[in-house]
Image (tube, rainbow, N blue to C red; front, top):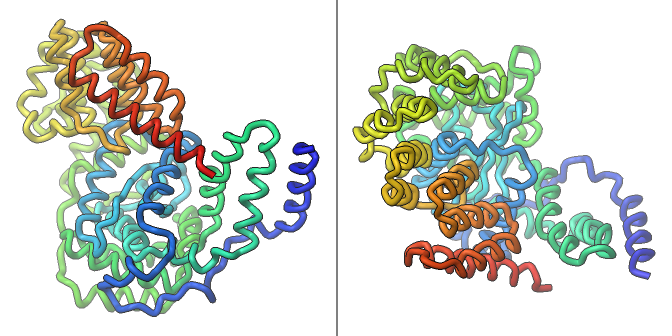
Length: 474
């Protein structure tokens, strides 16, 4: 009976939702008659969807994205984009939680999801010509979060039969086989599909430009990068930047918007900061990882260093670590690459020594901790290596590759409970709560586990149980 009902409902909705592939338009529904820059009343009045609910929805979306989309999980790149994003976010008018991810996608685009999830395509990063250009795009997306544009859109369309129909269709399609799967689709995959349809109105885009410019200026970047990038978008259909039209599709442009942005820039302080080495190297690493071309960088003194890094990194990826060992590793980024190469050659003591000089600067970075722990465990410094891994403060966006490597290192050290903790932590960030819970419970039953690891496992167990309870609620 349920099978027949689900099939009937699915067929009915499929015939009534033929416009699904077109972008949703909220041009007449979204009220953006708000004060110019500082909008303190937005948090109280914009939406009936509470901030806590938005954050929970954002967390679910982020975990769903990481499970289903080709996200870049390289530890250095994950740390880099989050450090840049959080630096900009700290200057936002409303300090909402923010999560930044890079999707392996050649299209030049970035998008914002409920709960502060901001995804930047690799194609967009590679088509920026300066760190300020990239920062301008990220600041614009942060402004969408701080002004709660998505929440306000959802409030305006809360009674939309399209949105309701999508939810019923998604659940009905699988309800007969798995109620849990149906619930997961309604709360996870459905939400992503709905967000993919969102096209911000030009008024929302103009507001995001204004707030984004203020963020950009307060963070010390070149504010001229925003109109420069917008002008590049405007020319996209007639020049070499043809892939940029995807950004225009989700971020509509107008002559007035571009003109207003140029005008606002003239009122802000003029800064032309030097690109950070992390940005230049990240672009090179992404270029090699994705096989994409990159736009020509604006004049920078860092180009030779970036080229050295790229050559050594490509050789290491190809199984030849020797070139990286010969780098003049006078910066943390080059030192990590050199240590990784030395570890590959089992020259563990040299790798550890190479990293110690930068411990105070980058001990909070996953790639550094992995390289140092590998060198220490390679010398049978088991306790020290595990301590190095444990020093990293884990966050929601910590690279999945970090958890995989940390699990392997713990297994190498014959520390089953620690290995299980990293395995369960990875599962948690993919929304695989049953696996995370089972793994944590098995590890808690192991003998001779350190008190610190036991505490971490219990905390993870509690979180997995809470998420499963939330999923079970109607």
